[in-house]
Length: 285
Image (cartoon, rainbow, N blue to C red; front, side, top):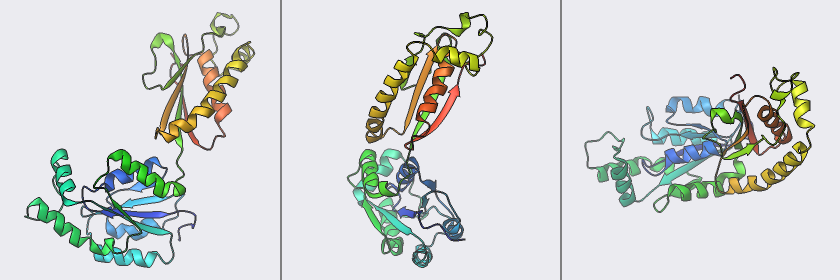
């Protein structure tokens, strides 16, 4: 079964400590499906499987039965029929040594050699993959943020990344949600709890919904919030914030906050820049 043409497969490889694992995490944040340390005998099966989004596959010296010559030959064959690219991560020896010392990691190459010689042995061993690379990234001078910026420049056009937006309704008497980035207090609205015919229902009930939505300030608040949110969303994305939590609170977290959270979800549900989750934290309390 051939991979659909609109999706890309990136083989992410290179020297140990050069940033390959970090790159896979960045790819994942950009909306790719990321697979790390895949046994080479499964490589053909994975890249030939019909997938629903772009794919990044990490292979290196830790990979079982890893043979760079065979892998390079297999990749070269696949490139004839697939949108397949190799990204090779490299780094100078001094920086690699410092990274291993700072992280206290052991070099994965199982040779009884000093670490400098292990690095050189790995460099020579990986030459078949270096020779077929489509993207060569030297991370010697990179911080993690610089690596992220570089990858976004190179691969953003292939990304289907979305900001993950979590909407929470909550009750103030149970405490603020500590994970919230934006918190809105809905206690300026009249409380259905004090209406005899509404008290026993929650914010999912149509009568409660109508009671809350028909109040004077409801539409004004959400018109203003939608304008604010749409304007700052791009700023969050430029700053690399991939996860936003917005919370709506009322006294008990049962009526006004639930109606407000559901209403905000309906307002932004068609925004293709967002992957949206909703949670009514205190509705059952």
